[in-house]
Amino acid sequence: MSRRSTLRRVGLLVLAVNLTLVGLKGAVWWLSGSLAVQSEAVNSAADAVYSLVIVAGLYLTTQPPDFEHPHGHERIEPFVSLFVAAGIFFAGGVVIWQSGTALLTGDVSVTSGPAAIGVLLFSAAAKYGLYRYCLAAGEERRSPALIATAKDNRNDILTAGAALVGVVGALLGFPLADPLAAMVVAVGILYTGVEVVRDNVTYLVGGAPPEELRREILNRALAHPDVEGAHDVIAHYVGPEIDVSLHIEVEGERTLNEAHDIETAVIQAVRDLPEVDDVFVHVDPRELGEWKNDDEVDRLADWD
Image (tube, rainbow, N blue to C red; front, side):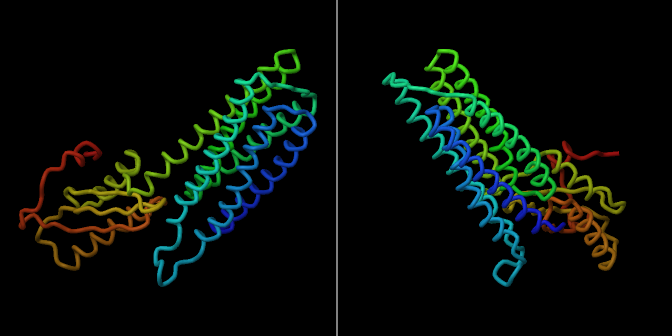
């Protein structure tokens, strides 16, 4: 299945599951009065809203390249992820306000029952399934939006567990356990938002990829038998994809055709990495005196 079809299918599935959970949690909260369940309902409502943004955003990012966007539209994805983070922060703020008000006033009236426990257990199971599914699809298709969604679902498992503790505590005669659990849920929600922002800022500001990937890029260039060295190796994110530029060092007696073949082979070797979008290679012959030491290359290269 193509990247386009996969991303759209996952986005629609996430939306459908979140809408289902909003309905179930909202109904149980209305019947039970549990603040912990209410906080989970708000969390799921925020999830449903950002799921709509994800579906729309993934539709845009999977459009084919055109004249105005020759590299495609994948660079929209980090912005989609930031919309996810905004929804997460809003949900966390609402829950903190509600649970904090209940704790300060002492106005806690809980009539939780088995339905509250059941809906929270179901929520945790559904979120675990979404977490595994979105993470696998996000990593396979290199989608920051889906990875952000997976992380949100992972933390939703923990917040559902905290809410469950609050409901059980209320049933056992400790009503303050319910708003306290809601506060824990809110902290988990806000942490997810921070995590999503932190991950996607790297894509937006052109940060460097992980060291393991930089090492692989360099060693693919140095693997060519006619490449004697490299310097000024730069790899940076442009959206969720990576652009690479580097200078390779070759002996100067090569013909222009030979130098072109070496350059082409190095470009192809680096571009074969699934994370890499484009590669720019400059060939430096020894006689021009442009060979130079590069401490970063010496640190990362697997010299024979």
